[in-house]
Length: 120
Image (cartoon, rainbow, N blue to C red; front, top):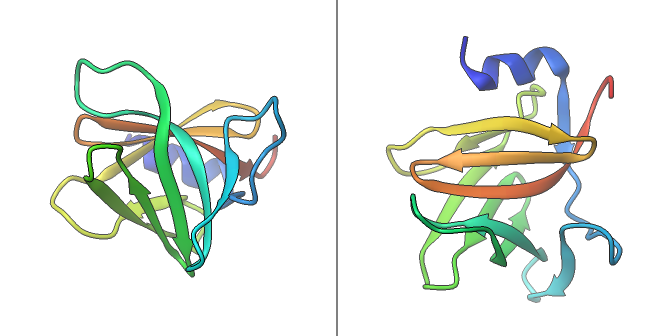
């Protein structure tokens, strides 16, 4: 069973991208074109976690921008399954880390994002 199928049963409702306080994993940032925040990410197979990825949301499209100029786009699914790759050939997988946080993976890139999870 795929991780995304497991999440569907848990009922991932939506990403909470409003930003967290000093103890959270995201900080608010204003880009002028929508809501944005800085998230923890590990880009590539051998990289460690760093708070260097800019998160932008425009409607149901979530763009995660890397410090090196690369990016990934995801679609926020309205059926409760979380995210799906919006472009590219590598599918997104999601794992629930702890209360209020998920890890999204696409290829060798990983992102930790806050999330509202039903039933938790």
